[in-house]
Amino acid sequence: REYAAERLTALGVAAAIHDRHARHFVTEGDRWVAASLGSGAVEARRALETERHNLLAICERALTAAPSIATASHGLAAVLILGALLPELGQHQLHARLLERALAAAALVDAPAGRVALALIARGRAEAAAGRGDAALRRLAQAHPLAQRGGSAPAEGEALAALSIVQRQGGRLAEARQLADAAVRVHRQDGDRGRLGVALGSLASIDLEAGDVTAAAARYGEALSHLRAVGDRLHEGLTLGNLGNLAQDTGRLELARRRYRGAIAVYGERGDH
Image (cartoon, rainbow, N blue to C red):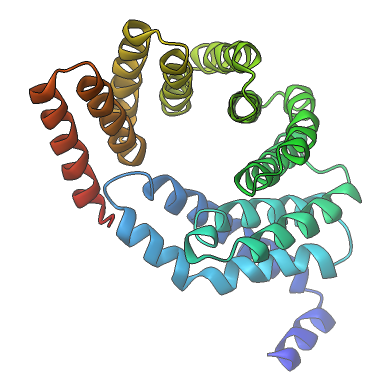
């Protein structure tokens, strides 16, 4: 393998081959990540596992090749794709290291701001999941203006939604509501129904915590319609479960059973255990 790489470099074609390799697996990886939310989750996860070494190679080239916007952008994309696999395998620390290294490589060149923002959001979420709220807020506060500067509505909305969750975890419901409302507005404007459904679900959870059951039910219901429209079965199942909890808490047991059965059916179809 090393000899082949040396020969390709000597012939002056290595860079072009590496670029085609990265473009192919980033395109395929994005498709697998999207599929992992739907009914083809098992096949998508299997594809990600099978091609993990190719995605890791793209990450490695972003660090070892001469700094360029293309290699840094591909490295960020690959590590974001691996975010759909490595944490599920319990490899949280490896993913965190890859994110840090990809962000460091991106800092050497003018990497696309929207993609850098998404990587910062991934790091912020990881910090929040580990209980490091202040570190999460710092990462996410960096991501939001970057997403705006890059004109990336998906990254802007995700940054706002992630900030909302961290504020909610810290007991700051008013701030969490403002941020979740802003995320919903961004995704309504850009027409991203999948992200809109997720943001509405987050806002519904805030409604519930504030004691507004009626508003929560309405938002979960709207979220469900958007998620079903785009085939996001993962969040559809989660939303059905939340609607089941809400129905049970308000004494509507038969409705709760239907919601829970619906969630179980979705998880079964996806191959979740």
